[in-house]
Structures are given as C-alpha cells and as structure tokens.
Image: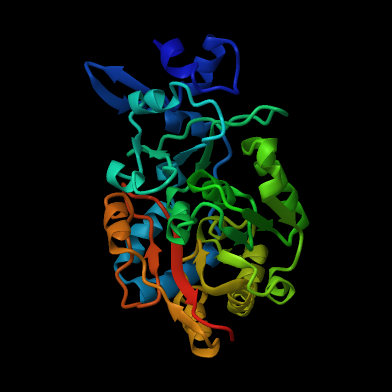
Length: 375
C-alpha cells in the first residue's frame, strides 16, 4: 500500500521500507474509506526537545494583543503555545516532476487551498495543498541537479503573493526575499520578465540562493537577479524600474519570538521591536520609489502587531504623495475564509490572518498600495 502512495514523493530514499518508516508518524491511515491521522505524531515529538516559551515575551503579547485583538487573542494564544497543533502547507513546484504527487497527497487527505474556480483564473495555477490536521510530511533534501517537488510553508504566507497577482513578463522586486518561499511562489504563478530577489542579511542571502537552486531550473536563471543590498536604498538606485514590488518586511515574528531562548534575549528583542516600524516605513517608501506609476506594492508581515502593520501603512499613506490604497479582491478573501481566520478589527488598510483552532495559519498581515504618479 505504501509503495504506490508514497514513492511518488522523491528525494528521501530508494528503499520503500525506509521511506515508510520516515513517514510513519505523519502518515494518515486509510481504513474503510475514511482517512484519519495517526496519533503517533505526538509520540514522535516527545523524543525531541520541546520549545520553551519565553514568559517575558508572552506577558508582553498578552497585554498588547488582548487590547488589539480582544477575544480573538485567546484563540491565537492557544495555537501559538501549542506547536503540535500547527498546520503546514505543501506548495508544489511546477518545474519539477510531479507525476502522481497530487494524487498521492489527495489520498493522504490533502486538499487544494485554492478552489478550482480561483485556480482557473490564473494563467498558471498556484497549487498549495493543505490538511485539516497538523500533519507535516518530511522536507526533501537538496541534491545538485535535481529540483525539489514541494516547499513546506505556512499557507497564509501565500496571501501576499496572491495579492501581488504577477502577470507574464512583468518586472518584479522581492525586496526582503529570504528564505525564498514567496519568490518561489511568484514563479509558480507566472513567468516574470525579471524577478529581482534581494536580501540584506548575509546568512539569509545564502539561504535564499540555496532555495532558488533547489527549486528553479538553470534555464530560467536569466530571469533572476539575486542581490545583497540594503532594501532601503533600492528605490533611489532603481526608481520606477518595477511593475510590482513585494515588501515582506522584517518584523517581530510572533511564532519565533515567543520561543526566544532566554529571558535576556527576549527583553532585548522587545526593545528592538520598538525600532522596527521606522525600518518598515523606510522599506515601504523604498518599494514605492522602485515601482513605476500605476505599479503595485504589497506590504506584509508575520506579526499581529498593529504598530508594525496598520500603523506603518497609514503613516506612509499620509506622508508619501502619489500613492493610493488598493483594496484586496473580496472574492479572494471570501474563498480563503474557508481556511483562514481573518481578524475582526476596524482597519481600512489591510487584512490580518490570525491562527485559531483548526485554522492555525498565520499570523500574516497584508496591505496593497498603488503608485498613481511620480512623487
């Protein structure tokens, strides 16, 4: 049974027995036509060191998010404190051999994040498969000359890419691109004329390069430009050069910051958190300078912090001339609401996905701006 369903997922082992063994803690069992997830996932994780919550960061979150999110913070808090409940999306790589892979995932209980009607509107359908349970299939190892079949990610991180809506032949800038998941997702939806992937941090820049090497064929190398620049300078270096720009800004990543290694580090990060909105505004302004008149900029973060989300966008809209808010398509929000939980706040400048029980995707904030004339 396992060889026919699992050996279509490559990159692990030529031995079906070993392959089955590596999947045993995440593999749904098929019985009497019903698909259920085995209970051994928790048993597998018991043997591994568990993440330790930083109480200093948690207390800070409790105060801030209780005020900003109200009752929805309680559900988000429960999810963030229980990593075993986190769901994982499987983004398929159209450049790799996907023979039988979709069928395999379907038999394991996965469904496509985007309904068929949504997928068919795109020139190249974005294919991300999700499971209703916290199942995580193994990552595939990097092998030179072989392209990985899928990329594991928080499915809510695809929302900025869907909002960017890249068309064939457009020049696109991913201003803060590492580790490369959103750049990869852009390439799954269209073949741009140019995809400029930038990352200022050296370690993350190297990570970005490895991601692109693992998923993108060399024949598309001429479409890619990977740089190691301060994103705040690109707007002045290349004014009006791009049709679309993604600013997935550095932020106080709620999922990782909550598990800061020690109290001292947590306190330092919370101090640094107050400086992030200034950096985020500068990056967003640089993106607006880099996009042509009529072009689109999408701003996103993976935090629920109002200071890093709505407040940043509102400040830029108030100070940067020649820019307007571009509302997200309601049909996109409606279709994703079946899987994502959107925050209930009175903001007119974006949407926030927050993790909740059974819908553990997020946090992910997204807002879209259009440059309407030269500054």
